[in-house]
Length: 293
Image (cartoon, rainbow, N blue to C red):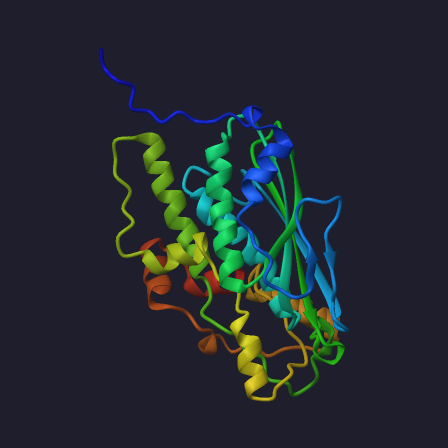
């Protein structure tokens, strides 16, 4: 008799909601002094220690913001944290805590949640933030994640969208369009797989843009660089929807116009080459692609 080599997966019902939460969050130590009480009580307690509290939240929904056909759960957990921390970085705040809420259908076993939380844990460790709470519930529409991120900063150091002034220099902290072109490669190879599951995906040569899509990073390091240079920007915004869209937001909030020099837009060689391979204008990807953070 042949032995069944398929791993036995654990249904969530075996642990229950509270058992699942305890199982997933038991290895998240608190490392920030502002985190006074974390997971396990009716609510968390934070002590801002005389600083202003900066709060942001984002929802990621399966089929809208991600496709589990090519997005590994561990990467997804990491990315879900990063997109929120990017908002805090854009306010010049220091990330300190997150809360994670999930809604998932019964097709997700405990092991899937473990992978997701492994990515969340990596992000917490890398960015020195504490998981202090959240919620889980069932869903009839796949996986939905909502993460709330909390940051702290002195009032005079908080940077808003509304502070840009005439003659300010408009700069960006990294190259643009990579995440969008990475998405195009993932979508292309996923379509090939659906048409012929025996075909191997052609991912070689796309490492950088795939990472930009699947495992982006929040530019929290820029805050330290600016502090060392004794610079407080007049205005900031993270690039989640594309450079063109974000400039429009800055213009609207600050009541100023902007001159954007196309030849100065930073674009990675791999992004440009991929765009040309797919007969796509790389400048359009840089301006409108989004998810560059």
